Amino acid sequence: MPDNVHDGTPLTYVDTAWLHMEDPTNLMMVTGIFIFDRPLDFGRVRDTLQGRMVDRFPRLRHRVKQVGSFAHWVEDPTFDIGAHLHRMALPSPGDLAELRDVVSDLMSTPLDFTKPLWQGHYIEGVGAGSALLLRFHHCIGDGVALVHVILSTTDTASDAPWPVRASLLPHEKHVGERIVSLLDDARSAVERTVGTTRKAAGVLLQEGVEALLNPAHARDVAQTATEAASVLVKMILKSPDTATRLKGRLGVAKRAAWSRPIPLDEVKAVGRSVGGTVNDVLLTAVSGALRRYLLQRGDPADGVEINAMVPVNLRPPAEADELGNRFGLIYLALPVGTEDRAERLRLVKARMDEIKSSPEPFVTFQILNALGLAPIEVAGLAVNMFGTKATAVMTNVIGPKQPLYFAGERIRTWLGWVPQSGRMGLGVSIFSYDGQVVVGVASDKGLVPDPEAIAAAFEEEFTELVAWAARAVPAAKAVLAKKKKGPPRKNAGRGRSAPRRGSRPSPG
Image (cartoon, rainbow, N blue to C red; front, side, top):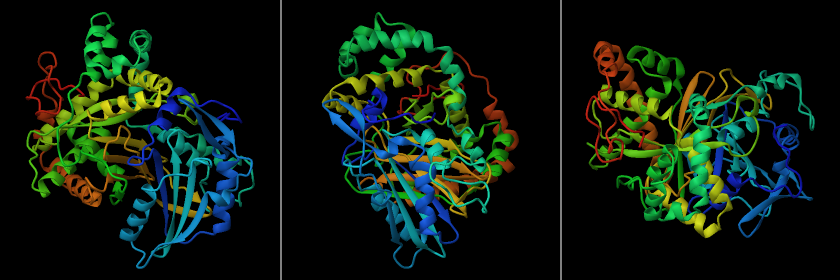
């Protein structure tokens, strides 16, 4: 069963950790939106969310009660979907700029902690169509889990029957389709190291949160920890990320934007041409987009690398639709300062390949467990410490390959935004649906007031990647196929400068 929460069920330690990360300047919400070409029947919207989502997942009817550092689910005896589903009209002229403003305002507005931690907003007047925005607190589930929650509301045909409460109909079989994340294929490699890593993580956790907050103590622990535990120590001792306009003190106001849909077939074609995966190509384009953004604002970019914190799904396939948080985190050094596209792609590919055999995701999962047990103040210090080592959160969720319908209407565009955990000011969410890829950008308004410029830069960068791959395939393949010589350099991927050619870059 995907959700067995009942009155009094404690939150897991990891879910508690995400609850404790809530901050007025960095709300821990996962946000998703459906965009339609036509208006919806609001009564059917309400009944669909009630029967397919609320009745099916009990924690959507439970609020969170905190007592000290611990929290548990408490049933809301007066639950009314009317308090969670809101109807609104987009201001004139009803274009995408107005929709961006509404999404940004909602992304800046905290959820009501006296009620179950989710909200829906049906938005009318999006051109000739409409939109449905859903917001969930991260303590309910991670991105992969919440995509499954949202999938439960959809159909594979427009003529599906009007939803009935608590029913699981045959046309919902696609709900069980496996939704995967950016580094899901790394999970098998992670599992091979789980035994030694669990032992190593245990050594550090027994030392208490002091190992997370006191670098000198962490160095002492490193002398006796296993090799896997040393991975954690290296993460703790990692230098702060490069100072750019993308990183700094956060405010309350957030901004949201998204790219136009990119055909997934084009991404695959570029990857086949130059010897990279879909993820390699997309991350190369995102790195190029951030480079463009910095240069457009007159900032130096050459030699700059910034770290992205990337979630890694740790769920077994059989538990893909279970709620809660089941992922680890890794640092990925983005070669923003590398102008040459072939070299940038080579660096991204090398780092992604190295990450796939790293135990870091399981180590960070254990850290989150520890933070869920720690006092809120201590957990906050640890989150701040890890947040200084990265500039952005970056996710990539592979959604359904076929078109889906909600309340009888085809979903034209589906995308989402990730919360910037660790008090970071930038989030980049790559989501594929129905043969298209959309990049969502969420930012702190004081740092990046115009995330639509980053989304536009991604479109431009991808267009040029397509053209480059078409005219420079032999040269690109030659660069990407270069043999790696010698062991990885100690400072590679630290955000200081691009590693020299031929080295084995670190994931950061």
